[in-house]
Length: 122
Image (cartoon, rainbow, N blue to C red; front, side):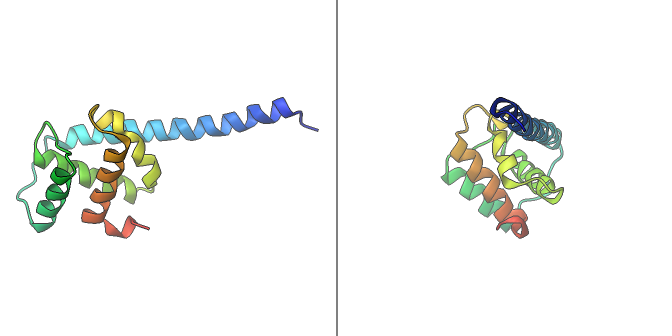
């Protein structure tokens, strides 16, 4: 029979693995986003304009410009395509920018998905 203290340790291990997985995903997402900042988007279309308008209305900008924000949105979709959950992507706030709140990050991730990969919105 498992003692209560032993059970708590097992549960903590499960959570640590999940937290480590989210951290690894966030680091990989930040690295990819940084890489994509230098990859130019050929032109802005109506989807890009709508996405950027929503970001600007919400007060979210990127020091590297609008194209970097569009590239970041496509990176979000890439990770959703790879099987990462929306919740795991919400943890990228500290990596994307220190001036983003948790609500800003949620808005950014959800708006990215709505604009560029709506099949991942549930």
